[in-house]
Length: 245
Ligand code: CAA
Ligand code: NAI
Image (cartoon, rainbow, N blue to C red; front, top):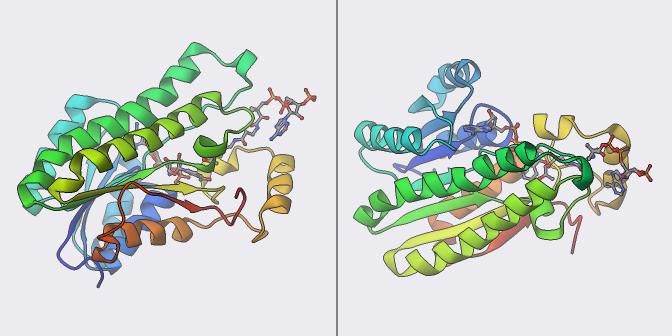
């Protein structure tokens, strides 16, 4: 029970890594607010997870500041405090630079950058009240090293690293730890859109010779959310099978 009594908000929790994180956090004793803009799948997942612990679903587009603020105050009302924020929601709109539209660029920035800004800004006042908190942002191997076809996404995930380090400096003295996880390629819907030949090429260059599983990333979130990481701040934890070193 590494998160006994803790209250966690996990964004993008209807699918993939966020959903697995919700399972792991509930198993470790946390109360979990599942946040996603997909209400049909999100409600269904919350119903399935009821047996595992205290869980509630909130339909929110993280890019919408008013929706985020409303959700955060409802979570506080329902669970009385907020200990952990996992900024996991994210999208891709891949295209080669010369074909990328400004809409494709902007949509990714709105969700992957503004979404992280909105959720963190709304949650931090409650963490300051507690004098403690854990914020975990989701970057990517693409944000650290770049990737063909991902100008928008790589820029957004590099921005996540910049925000993580800035907030680690701003809030460290207030008892709030801010860290990022930079996953490699993980078997979720997001990677399902990558052409098979690209995947084959990737697996060959990953020293562990496999893609990541959602649980590989959820376990990293768990470490950074737990008291075990109390002296870890402003770091980017690479969970990528060693794809880049
Ligand atoms: N490395 C080097 N060259 C590459 C490449 C790569 N990874 N991918 C494509 N290219 C080359 C192609 O070989 C091709 O070269 P030629 O013009 O010489 O033939 C050229 O780039 C154009 O490629 P496509 O024919 O595939 O172009 P397209 O316009 O049909 O598609 C694309 C472009 C949408 C970007 C497509 O290539 C694609 O989806 N690539 C995968 C992008 C990717 O890796 N996305 C990761 C998604 S998962 C994720 O984002 C999670 C995370 O955090 C890691
Ligand atoms: P996924 O596509 O399986 O799940 C993402 C979830 O986020 C979905 O349920 C989606 O509805 C939700 N979402 C998207 N935009 C939202 C918004 N505006 N508001 C609320 N919810 C929203 O993706 P996956 O793979 O689980 O990704 C989770 C995070 O991990 C993302 O930030 C992604 O960029 C990051 N990541 C994923 C990698 C991978 O290989 N799968 C690698 C590196 C990082």
